[in-house]
Picture 1 (cartoon, rainbow, N blue to C red):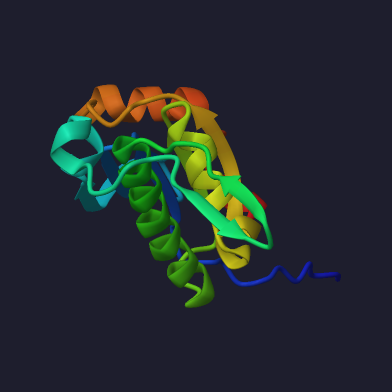
Picture 2 (cartoon, rainbow, N blue to C red):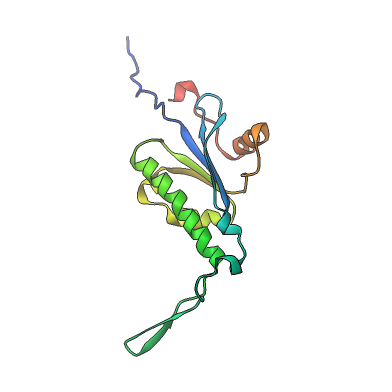
Length: 162
């Protein structure tokens, strides 16, 4: 008689991060039915402020050196705040990946914040990114949210596939 030896089931739940430039929601996704359980919610209101409310210095300042002038492209205060928020979220995901708190994660974010967030992921988090999509689902709740996420993500593996 032959027995197939299977690796032990990974009990850590897959994470799903829903984000836009001002809000993010982190979920665990159940192995058996794909249900979502919210772990944490993040709000970054500075990403939505008017430029006059966040402006600290003039954009496009030049740096002089070796007889040449180098001008950096102007970056709006809003873009700087969005970059800061992306870096905060990327740091959270990278810490979780390095701490082995999740087997993988899906990233569903609005455009262009998806690109901004993906470009700031550390190597540990980037290695665990299993899926990404350009959608803003941060405002949805309950059954409507689970339905929209399940339409995007592949179903959880069946019991015999683990």
